[in-house]
Image (tube, rainbow, N blue to C red; front, side, top):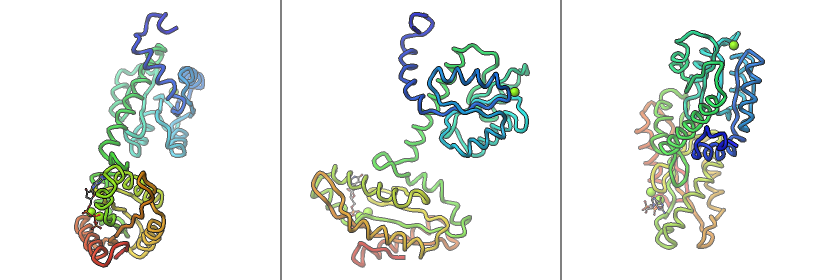
Length: 311
Ligand code: GH3
Ligand code: MG
Ligand code: MG
Ligand code: MG
């Protein structure tokens, strides 16, 4: 049908169709005080299979966003009671950056400076009402494409390719100030025991698989509350924000025992994998000094026979 209409290129239609499938899992929040406007935008979005949520003003929109962090696109009107479109965007951008959510501004206000002001406040795009349906669809599609692209870049920059754990760089970005700002901040530095033997005896692929599975275990045990990062080859670090050394050590030791007693299944059979760990709590030193201390304890754990935590 679209091709027959002869207004769309073949490439565009292909892109549209492949997007339709993904759209079904994309939540779009429409903030507009006019019921008619809101319903109209809803209909357009539902034509493309999006999940649509409505808010009658900016304050309601903020509540919905805090309850549903998986909303990918916010389409907001300018003139609204309570919290208007500008304030809404400013408040959203305080917490959610461009890899978290995309924003499109809408308005039938004739003020020519609106679109620039929307974009300066953090919107990705702006549409003047009334608009042509096709333009609306094109802009939504482009905006979501750039959200995907930003997210892919973010993942590449901040997550390790093999294990999907956070990178060392991102870890520092997240936590370098916590040594000063958080009342209790503890690091656990982890190094798998005799990992080189796994590579030497079973090959690099099995080694990789062990790293992936080991990371999965770390994430499962800690990622809900703490940051897990891959520091290098078979070294990992966990930031226990809010925990003192003895609490973090207890958690780590429980994990250590579980790990040691649950072999990792690989193509070369079940392998027993243990690790050694140094745990250190910040005490008015910078994060590098704290890490150096955790590394000393880790070294001591290795010297002392491995498969243990020293704090
Ligand atoms: P120790 O108990 O003293 O820690 O001994 P180890 O063998 O674990 O320590 P070592 O640092 O000598 O060996 C780490 C090995 O990890 C060496 C390196 O080839 C391997 N390695 C680093 N990154 C990767 C990776 O991404 N995949 C695989 N398969 N191996 C890796
Ligand atoms: Mg309005
Ligand atoms: Mg090592
Ligand atoms: Mg090692």
